[in-house]
Amino acid sequence: MLDLIIRHANLPDGRQDVDVGIQQGRIVAVEPGLAAQAAEELDAAGQLLSPPFVDAHFHMDATLSHGLPRVNQSGTLLEGIALWGELKPLLTQEALVERALAYCDWAVAKGLLAIRTHVDVCDPRLLAVEALLHVRERVKPYLDLQLVAFPQDGVLRSPGAWQHLQRALDMGVDVVGGIPHFERTMEQGAESVRLLCELAAERGLRVDMHCDETDDPLSRHIETLAFHTQRLGLQGRVAGSHLTSMHSMDNYYVSKLLLLMKEAGVAAIANPLINITLQGRHDTYPKRRGMTRVPELLAAGVPVAFGHDCVMDPWYSLGSADMLEVAHMGLHVAQMTSQAAMRQCFEAVTTTPATILGLDGYGIAPGCRADLVLLQARDPIEAIRLRATRLAVFRRGRCVARTPAAISQLSLPGRPAQTGFQP
Ligand code: FE2
Image 1: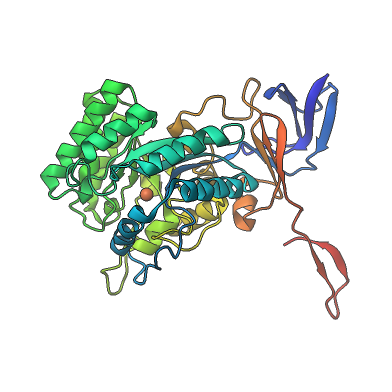
Image 2: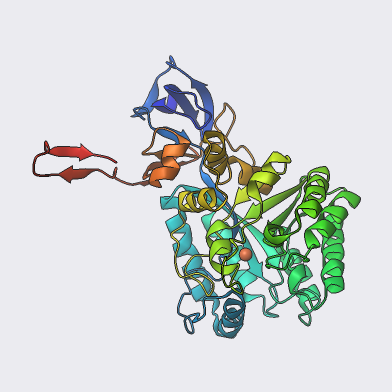
């Protein structure tokens, strides 16, 4: 007798009419016409059952602070960083925890059950680090939170940041971050990459740097990141976030860089909603899109995830924890409209970030954790097209969120009445 069977589900890999059996928080069977009984059964009726969404890049210490202490008037990256600097001294731990918990509620409702969040370590009080370590424990029963020690003002440029970053790691932060393009010079940027990669190697940690988040085609810290990843044997444990300068780089140079990244086992994380709004701001027309070269990275064998980056914070006043909105934007900006490419965009918010984060037991196969989301869509492409409703979200086999199906009633002259209309 199983705990739960979800019957007649479509899976993201294209399998249809499959039953998924769940026992004690784990998936125990994935097969058509499963001959078993369960305490509870759910008929998926041909809808898509996916492992949960995963956000590879977020800033939970800043989320839901929109308007505090004022609104970003220009909407630019640099005013956002300045605004965050004004907000930091005013932060309280209670307010930070409250906002982070509220965002995690949003996330679960949207089937987003794992988030890698950067946390600013340039504040000597490390107030945000303490707050998010607390939140990581609080949400553990329903959401995996991974923290990155992020020196927002530059680990070399900001006085004391090198020490604060190491203290944050001592306190239990999971991943080493960085921001080489924000250091004072190219040389200092490269030096910061070396120091941070060596620190990660010493401590056996993963690395995820904000890297080359600029329109400057000569910002090439990703080359240095790939070099030290390989030198220190960190393959498969390092991600370069943003990499927007690649958009503007010389094609010949990129043809070499892609191979170096593949060879080093470095992953890429693009943030489509933020890259399309923050990059190209100094351009007249035509304006660059700014997002990194996603199809080319994928073709070279470099894993690419899409992150949300910001929701209602100094940099971005929109967003709703909906990773399908992120995938939708990524698909458009990268012109990934082939059938295969659209499926890759779905993978960029599910399986690929799960691998980058090193999530344990992620997927739909016997032995995996029963973390699942049932979508009001038949396949991943339809899910992106509709930013489909999350009908049910399961954590360790237990339903933690439900949303009614989006169904309209139409009464149009000259058309038959429709009570269960879906686009
Ligand atoms: Fe970021």
